[in-house]
Amino acid sequence: MGLEKSQALILRIIPFRDTSKILTVYSAERGAVSLLAKGVRGPRPRFGGALELFALSDLVYYHRDSRELQFLSEATLLDPHLGLTNDPLRYAYGTAVLEFLLRVLRGPEAPGRLYEMSLRVLEVFESCPGPALASVFRAFELKAVSFLGHRPELYQCVECGREDTDGFSPRRGGVICSACEEEVDDVLSLPRSTRGLLQRLLTSTLAALEAEPFSKGELPALTRVVEPFLAAQLERYEPLRSLRLVDALNASTRPGPAFQQLS
Image (tube, rainbow, N blue to C red):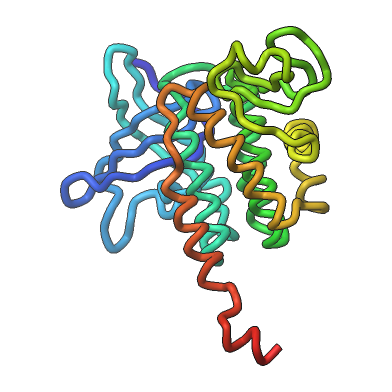
């Protein structure tokens, strides 16, 4: 059993007995790691906010390859991402990022670029304009799935290579031309305008999308393509429950009939 130190993002917390927690963290060194943190709950919690949701912390733990649950020794808070906890909508999108990671991470593995992207999107969520949250999140999903080896083909037909396409196959992972549509049984309509939005999500930086987000009217068309694509490409992916909270929060802030009449 060796002592290991790693920066990590707290993804999930499960209370254990009276004073302990079972944590799932996204470690910079090993990917997803499950930890038992003993004696960390109570009026004066040990390690303070280092073991709270969204926290980025330096962790020291005892690791053994044959054991699924490792034992936490020390924790030092680096960044609590407090900007996510001060606003319900930012919190909802932040939890959607954590939920997405819990669905796609498969235990100990080299995190690669996805780890840095995950930290970056939470940082952007803390301060970006509210209308940019949805665009930034969809970009995170597409970039993340690309880092995991499932980058969508958005420029040439995945069957024949033609550039003139008007369909998309979630299972084949890319655009489909009209000549190849009959050979593929899950083709979705993909107007050129929507394809352009997907290309922008995949190639733009999060900062660029933060500065120039998509309009609310453009987002439903993206969802109709992105969600089936993720479900087809990722084994354990299901629609994120956190996005239901996003929808509920957005619905609660829409002007009612009385407000619309006054305005």
